[in-house]
Image (cartoon, rainbow, N blue to C red; front, side, top):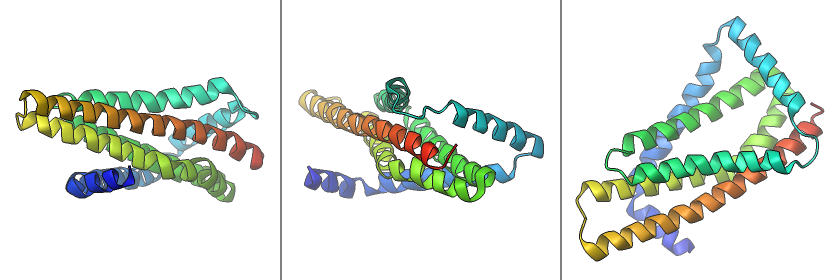
Length: 199
């Protein structure tokens, strides 16, 4: 499996490099987005964030974990569907940029709001689960982009298209399982992190 994955990435490294750049650009914009907030908006968001922390379950909550997993699955399902169209690539890149922006904004805002404790929350509840979540997102987006390009190139002949479609669906399914698992892991870390830092 690892050999197949490395071979795939090596073959399409340009696509994955552009996706990484788009994600990183979104992340940077997200960080700078916090600095662009007005004092009033910062206060409102800080109040909203504090309410979210208060509503965070202190013990393992199946409904909470299921919601996070569901959100991740919906994102991957949307990317998969876009890959089935010949015009989906720009929207796939927009999703990747948006996810990077959200992560960067969340990182910066939590640290800005909670200072040193915010660093701990970010590292424990977001950074660690993101080690799995981000590669899965980029891999799913890459698979969708590649299949979209295959459709654009006009490979509509029988066995070839069927083989590519089956490969795309199977690989996307595996990536979706991985990112759903990462969502559950993030839920666990979120609960433990908030509890550990006394929020």
